[in-house]
Length: 304
Image (cartoon, rainbow, N blue to C red; front, side, top):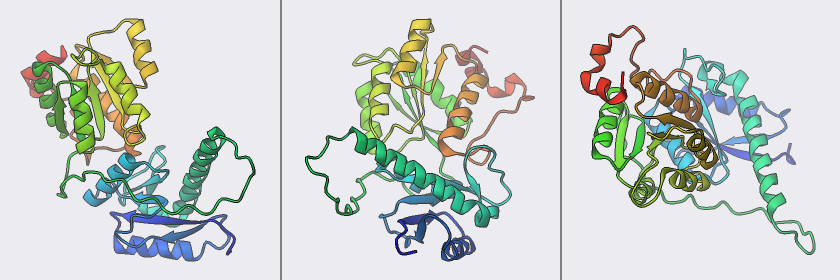
């Protein structure tokens, strides 16, 4: 057992009995290919994070991990009674059965990433055994103030004050937090100073365009896992291709129906958070809800 690779696991947002169960699973995993150790609370040196993103601390830890990057992996733990679906998340009801397979899968992904980085590096004159690298200090990031029921945060980038206001109304109606920027440079400043769960980006802006901004986001390991939706009046096949090449996760053409915007947000947040049921994190307009209840301002904006 001593020659097995050892990986440190942080668990955030879980109850004490669930942490106790994780310790028991690790203690009785002598036949597993990897060895796992539960990191102490507050320890920033870990390889894998198991987080309940329905808990404010768990969601903040997951956001910090996505922002910091650094070759670590997130396993989403769902509260009791919530089905994981096909998202790769695990249920705390089935920790004993699902924890080790999920951790092993995450370790395999880490090792694949490390092999890819190594294959791209320059060859050494003489191969030498490399010493075990010291843990790198976690990058300094601005953490959102801790509070209960903190909404998911969306960054809206558009040079039109009217569009920014209308999108803010729509997002807040869905129970999402919204921060706006009127240019690509202001958007980068917002990304440097706060954590976001998704970005809505226009194409035409005074200092740059949405394609360049999307490429800049996707090339940075701190933000590349954040979904980017391009929302623009340009809808030609050429523009759609440019959006795909820039790395956007979805492309919407103005005017977009309110429900189409809602569905795009739900689809991308499900993928990035690893959660099928988002009802505890955002408000969804029901299919049978009369359009009048959505509000005339939203109807006019999204062309319903």
